[in-house]
Image 1 (cartoon, rainbow, N blue to C red):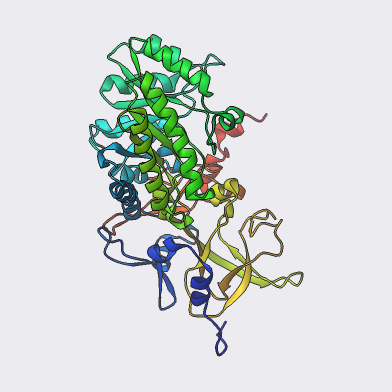
Image 2 (cartoon, rainbow, N blue to C red):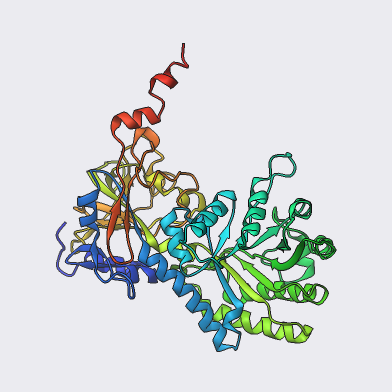
Amino acid sequence: MERLHGQKSYEQELRNELKNPAFKEVFGYRNGYLVLNPIEGYRKNEIRMVDLLNKYGEGGAIQVTDLGMIKKRAHQLKEILWKSADSVGYPKNKIQPHHAFKVNIKGPNILSALSELEAETSWEFDLFNVQKMRRRGYVREDIKVVSNGFIFDWKQGKDPSYARRIIDAHNEGIDITPILGPHMLPYFQKNVNKGVLSVGLRLKFGQVSSDAELEKLVSRFGFGWTDLQKEAQLIKNSRNVEFTMLHAMITAAHTIEPQAMAKSALFAAEKWAQLKKVHPSLTHLNFGGGFPTIDSGFDHDAFLKIYFSGITEICMRYGVDLPTVVIESGSFVAADTEHLIYPVVDTYKNSSNPYTEVNVTNTIMDLADIWVQEDPFTFVAIDHANDAPIQVRLGDTTCDSNCTYPPKNQPDRYISMPENTSAVVAIMVGAYQDVLGTIAAQGEAKSVEHCGLRTPKQVYITETGQIWTNTLPSMEEMSNIAGYNDKMLSLVK
């Protein structure tokens, strides 16, 4: 739609309304076309998103992964931590950032992050891949691993495969620290037969700052304070395990003011210092995950200065050495690095509302993570950004009323788009994409989605700007995947 005199363009309106500082860093518009900006120190060229779609889309949606941005964010995480620590005199060599596998488990994404960071695993699959990459020389020999999660299903008496793999990794010489919860210690006491395994204990924790608040806290993870002290004593009396790390995660930090976040984090630091007096082997304080992303608006420096200076004061008061502070970060590194492009297939006016309905290819449920986390999508236009915007609602090519955005339970919400845009882009969706969905084969995208739709084609952009993409399945292959083959159909008599 042509702009009237004095009317703002779509791009002007977007920049006024979108308060995401990462958007201007990652994207720009050139002559109305959305581009990925160059990445200082990595990719030198800008890339038009419409060119990726036209060359690789094959008529459907594509998922673009910018590996250079992953490396940049991983390095940026270290720089933020180091700069704040240095400003208050906290030693840089006592800061240990880890990357959480679970945030996006695809191999190229993980390896890009591990080029700068240590590893944090949540299940046996993650640790298997650490071992695999280490054996093949993709990651450093001295990589450090923190293993979280339910390390084995003790109550059901099932094979403790994750715990066994942790011991295997330890026996290989990997610097690994499993974080233990209730009922996990006996397996390691019984089965560690080579050297001494470092272990951590998870404190039942949250946004608390007193013993009374901690006592009332309900959490499905970790020990209460009294039980944790008892567990630490059991470890101290063991011949083959050593208590080296306290894990105390608060919550996703972007939901809390930096000062309030620091207050809870320093309460955990005081618990660490109390334990350190009794257990000299304790060397690491694990802040856990939830480190806010760039686009959250969180004041990282304000929080970290209070945190690091507070730890120093606490340790001086207790007469103990400073801990190595472990930060487990996933979304900070991954969120801004992937984007889904949906070609527009149809637009029409529905007389029952004032918005233009815009139908796009594939299924909006590809964005499964945000349906779970209740975060809003950010959709932007791929082209025609110099035109005037109109109010639209998105729907996909399924015949389900749920596959719309904004969701149908928000009938009065809309998004702005140029009327003639050829595609819409869900930007910065690199974190937790597999919560409801799955990871398709990276060489060949052979999976079938709802309504028999193909999964979006995967497009990787390397840190130097090279493009790699996978192949999509044929209709016959999709049919066989869904069970329309002789082997499966013969089950029905």
